[in-house]
Image (cartoon, rainbow, N blue to C red; front, side, top):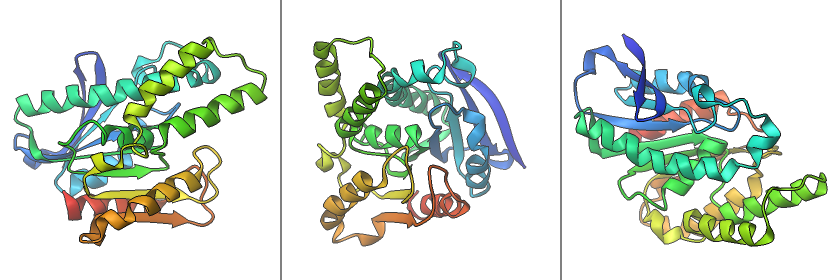
Length: 255
């Protein structure tokens, strides 16, 4: 039987999903990060299928989302997008240490996945944490600086003034560069990585992510099975059932 428990780690609310039969055992773990304006409960279908395969799955609420919302609207939240992404990356370490101390996860078999903002978070986490054995990015982008600049351009075209000076924006770009996998591909260190992205995605553009995939392809010459990019011609900014099932298969093979 698959069980779902609500827990709190420090100030991070999460759902802990596991096969009850293995609840007290050290298991391979998958941390799944939700998207912008979403919440932990929205990815329970991923967690259920992963838990069926013997994984312990942890679904946290990102800052200002789900149980952590403070009522800000989408426009205001979008100006804090990168603040939330970086906080989620930092909180991954907190969650991992908590579950390790409780002897519930195998520290050598940890995977991270996420959709949209969660996929972006996942790719940024790979620049920081060598303990991530494998990862799946669903509609994410590794190019933090490029994506942030595109966001700024959209804000300006729409006549929206950011509550930041040019100096503050420049400083934020320097911070984002540290988490930008496209600027630090060597930090990937040939770890198993899968991308899923719809070609009709108008929220997180397909092409920059696919371009990054092509740039790192050569570094997987000796382990081609550890790198995969799944494109869907007519898919927009919504993960298909194929993306769901291939995510589960990926962790079965690599974790």
